[in-house]
Each structure stands twice: as C-alpha cells, then as structure tokens.
Image (cartoon, rainbow, N blue to C red; front, top):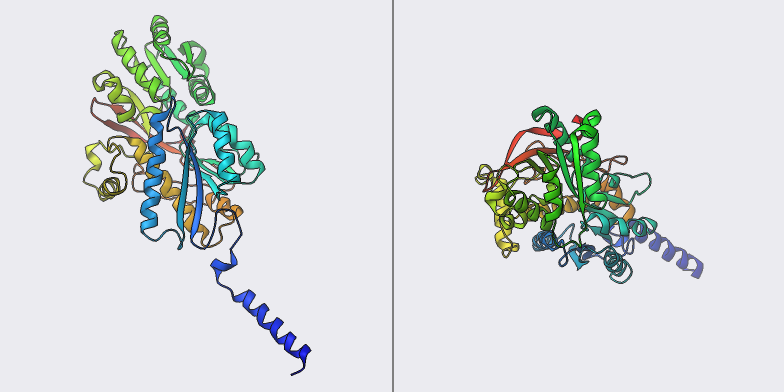
Length: 407
C-alpha cells in the first residue's frame, strides 16, 4: 500500500472513532467539576453565627447526596458535595464561593443559604456563567431570568406569602391593627412590601406600627414592647429563628395576645417553637409547602416512611421534628432531578436549561397539590402554599392550597 493511501486510511479510522466515541467520553472537559466518575457541587451554609440553626439544611443536603451515591450516583457519577461555613456573613460567603469556584472547580452552586449572602455572590456567579441553583432564600427578585439568568431560588416567594397573610387578615380580621417586626434587609423588607401589596388601599390604615432589627442585635424585646404599645392586635414577624423564638416568647411574657403570623422560614418546631416554649406559640399562624414530620396525618403514608428511613440511615443525628431536614431533603431531590435530566451532557449551559425546564415535578414530602415547575421565563419553582396553625405540639394545615396566581 502506498504511504499516502495508508495515511488516508488512518485518518478515516480516527474520524469514525471520534464520531462513535461514548457519550461519557465525549463530554469530558465540558465543565469544571465533571469527570467520568464525579460531579462537584458547591454550597455555603451558616454552620455558625446568628443563623446557625439553618445549618441543618446543609447537613440534610449532604445526607441525601450520600444516599444517592450509595445507589450508584447520577448517571454513573458520584456527587462530591462541598459545603462551607459562611456564618451568614456576606463577605465570608464571597470568600468561600470564590474558593469553591476557583480552587475546588465546582460545576455549580446549590442551595446556598440566605438572602444577603446570596445577593453578595449573584453578580460574580452570573458574570462567570456558573449555575446558582435552588437558592435557599425566598425574595421575589430571584425570579429575574432576563438580568440574572444563572440564579434561581427554590422556595416560594416571601412577597406571595405576605400577600396570603394580608388576604387572610382582610377576610377574617376586619378592622385589624397590624404591627410588623422584620429583619432589616431584603428578606424582611419583602414581607413588609408583600403585606402592603396584599392589603392594598387598606395598608396605610391597617399597619399601625413597624419595627426592624439587625442580625447583630442581642434581643428584640424593646421592639415587641413598642409594637404592643401601638395598640396592634395583629403581629407579623419576619425573622430568622433566633429572633422569631425571642418574639414568640416575649409576646407571651408581656401578656400580649395578637393574632400572630410567623414567616415560613422560621416555623421550625425544633429551632423556634420548642426554644420559645411550645405553649407560648399556640395559635401562631404560618405558611407551608412541605409536610410537617410531627403532623400525625402523614405518619402512616409511604412518603413519610421513606423519609423517616432516610433520616434513620443517613441523617441519624438530626432532629426528626425539625422541618429544615424536610427542606434539605426535598430541595436536594429537585437538584438530583435536574442532574438526571442532563444525562451525560453536564455543561453549565445544559444544567441551566434543564433547571428551567421542570414540569409539574411531584416530590414525596411536598404537601398534596404542590409541585415544582419552571420555564425559561419563570424562575419560581414553587408557587403554592397552605396556611398552618401551631397547636402546641405540631403545625396543622388548614384551608386549601393557595397559588401565587390567586393573589
């Protein structure tokens, strides 16, 4: 055979091989953090600091990924979940996220906690086109795919939640005089904005007092005393667990008996209601989108039994009564669904495409009638909630499922 004919044969063989190479091999190097056997995912959580009770979520995320890895991983790849403590401090969040991206070379950021910490990293992650997925924060501005196409939250909007409380007040508490305690940041302010929007023309007349607090404050006792002195007979508390527990306790101790609405982010029995004193929280109203593990109505269901089996095997040191474990479990199921939908095409572009293509995903510990859906122009995965009331032992849901479109 002539040399040029031999070379032509070799080149033809190489071209065929390149076309027929396995999908896994074909995707090598498509994104940092992805190999044939591993997917690196980054996370920040407040394992210390004023919001440390939320560290439960990060531990639940870790535990769920451990179960997935024991089951063989996702499309043959194991999850390497790297979760770092940011102490609920935005500057520290920036530092930790830069390490995760630039040193650890993670594929994406998942379930990073907190409004202010996530706002601090949103620009950096979007500038670098790194998926910033299923953020553990409910401010309305996360649903902005036009300006921030790489950032997507997971829980329902705080604005919608506050509008739901407003609608309940207008229907059931006519003439209510409302006091508001809120955290002085975008998280707390969204509740105040949503309440005003929901009350509409009645807002100025109905809201008689507003008090804020900083996460560096020792207590909120003086704010509660001031709100009581205003003559308010309804209280909305938009606070993280440390201050929510203080508010419930102080309201009870001063003998004030308002109809008390508590932001969803602080309705954990283990982190808030028990530290406050369960008897002091009787009658508090909140909103939920997940099943509360302590509610007896779920405990004979296959979904609850599956969740409890996971808790006992993979998250045994955690408190079964803490709904933050349910949050981590369900958010991580959503992340796993997105990665499975990617198949072997684990580019960052495709991860975002699949995250924005979820249709009516039903997860076992979501309340009946609530599912996860997204689209390219809708980055709000969960749009339904249900009101609940604390009875001294557990939260009891009441009324029907309320959708964002109902407000």
